[in-house]
Structures are given as C-alpha cells and as structure tokens.
Length: 444
Image 1 (spheres, rainbow, N blue to C red):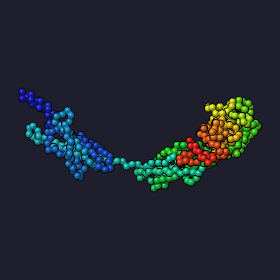
Image 2 (cartoon, rainbow, N blue to C red; image 1 turned 90 degrees about the vertical axis):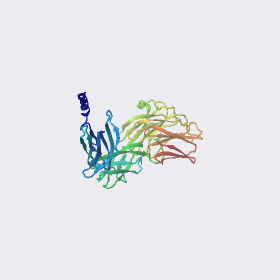
Image 3 (tube, one colour; image 1 turned 30 degrees about the vertical axis):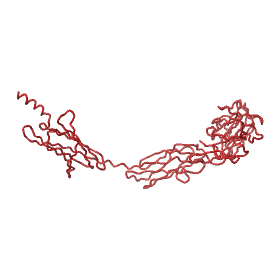
Image 4 (cartoon, rainbow, N blue to C red; image 1 turned 90 degrees about the horizontal axis):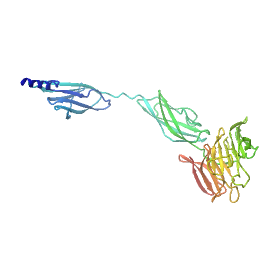
C-alpha cells in the first residue's frame, strides 16, 4: 500500500520546475514601447503558492527597484498557481526583471528558485523631415476684374527647413495663378524659415463662372503635398446695355466688333428649315460656317407672337443670340410664345433655347417691344418687353447665356430702368431699379 502511495506523489510533484514549485515570468519580454517619456510596462508572473520569501526586482544595471502592488488571481485550471499582475512606469532603456523565492521540499530541504527576463523600452524613431500644406477657400475672382490672393500655409516638422515651391499645375480654363500682384502664370517660393506664401489668381473672358475645385501643389526636397480649395468665378460687375439686333430680313449681315464673325439673315427655306428666317454665323475671313443655322420668325408689328425676331452679337464679343417669335422650327419645352436661342461664345453653335414669355407689342401704356440687354462680359442677358398679362406694364426676363437657362424675371411699370450685376457677399445678384424701386435676382 505504501509503494502505491509513493507513485501517486511522484506523479503529482513532476509538474513542478523545482520539486513542486513553479515560477514563470510571462511579461515583460522583448521590446516595449516605444516612448519618449515613462511608459506603463505590463508585468505578469505565474508562481505557485509553495514558493515563499518572494522577491521581485527590476534593474537598469545601475538602480534596483522592488516591484510590488500586485493584483493576485488563481490561474484557470489550477488550484495553487497564482497570477501576479502590475505595471511598471519605465523610461526608454534596457532592463532585467528578477523574480525569486524559496521552496521547502517535502524532505525538509530548502531550495532557492529564481527566474529573470531581459527587456527594453525603445525610443521612437525620429520623424522624417517633412511638411504639411493647407489653404483657405473659397477664393473669389472676377472675370476680367483683377486678381485675388490665396494664402497657403505650410507646417514644418522633423527639422524640415528647405524652401517650398507653390504652384497650380492645372488651373481651370481662363484662370491663371502666379506671383502677386498680376497673377501671371508661375510659381511662388516660401523661403526657408517661413510658413506662408501667396498666389494671385486672375480670370479672363474664357473662364467659366461658378465654383471650381482647384488643386494647390507644394514641392520641396523631394516631398510633394497637395490640397484643394474652391475657386469661385464671378460675372463681371457693372451695368447692362442694350444690344441692337442687326439682322432681321435677308440679305442683312453684321460683323462682330472684332471682325472675327459675321451673322447673316437668310430665308429659312434656303437652309431647309420650316422657320421664316435663319441666322447663319461664319468665321471671317473666308466665311467658314460655324455651327448650325438658328431658325427665327418675325412678322408684322402689333401681331401677337410675331412682333419681333432677329439675330446678332453681344457687344464686344462673338457671342451669338437670337430672339424670335415661337413658330415652326423654333422649339422649346414650355409654352412661352417667344424663345431665346443662345449660341456658344467662341465657336457659335446652339447651346440651347430658353423660353421667355409672350410680349405684347408696344403701345399705350406699354413701353417696350422685345429688346435684349447684355452685361459687360456677355454671360447674362435681359429679354425685356411689354408684359403680356400685367398688372405691371413691362417684364424683364434674365437668361444665363452659357447654359441657356432662365434665372428669373422682374415686373415693372416705369418706362425706364437700370440693371447691374453687383456683389453680395460670396455671391452675386442683378440689381434692377425702375420707378425708384429696387428689385434683386440672385445669380447661381
């Protein structure tokens, strides 16, 4: 019976490292951190209850520090193995954790037990010299209206000190960016030690109005950074002026003010159109046909729906514009009895048709037969005529030319008016004054 008991005890004790004692440093092991200041390093020690006189010391090779304040729990699946956990606040460096104690064997012999773990708290890798780029938008620039400045800010890190070059590689059509104040195409350099630079933007007549997303680029020392901002191109400010329609009946012709384009009135049948007439645009010299003929109608004075028609140019440009009674061959989606046909500015072809209301012919108390007024950069038009319904005598209808869309309308009774494009914060509006009263239409 005694032999059998001794076998059982031997099996039970074989699980220990020293006799039936066990001490394992689970953590820390290897690299910890990185840190530039003290970092919390986890400590996890598994030790059997049979180990007495326990001692836990961490050393950096110069200073030894006792480790205490453990949280204690029993390791799952065991009955006598404690799990000791705590944290050490350590700065970057090399360390050794020594855990030790004694085990009283069943024979009465006292045996020391000790374990060590070497580990390091690493320092972070110094950041590579670099910079970031930022700018503020939206930036507002006016067509043919001077320059607007954009301030770019760089933030240097990691000892970065090189000069930084600012550029806009692909600005929108008609927009240039470069050194102030002129904004001619070019780059701007932020010198070493500085953090801001200024680019001047300008917009000419080829620039499309509205919002555009522009990419700003910064280059230095093999590092490239980009950021985007919103560039808002305004219509030119200033008054609308009346444009005469130079051609109405064949064989009338007119030349644009720069002599580049000619418009001719021809019979609709000559162009295979069901309309009474057609406006034909040619590039000069050489009479190279531009786009397609634009149909229009006009009839006798005082005949509703056919009192006006003709084709011409916006003052100072080659912009084509046709206003006509809405008859055969002149198609627009709504039920208005007149239609404005807008032509693309640089190479005339029909952009689209904008319906305008039927105008009454002139006569007391109506003052206007249909007339057209353009703003100074030929991006907006007013189709003005005697109001078809009232109670106001007259009606001005705003047309945005590059897209041939109606923007809004204004009713008025006074025989004279003024209309201007004015700035309104980050937007623009048409300010319309008649009879001492001001009306506004906000522009998209």
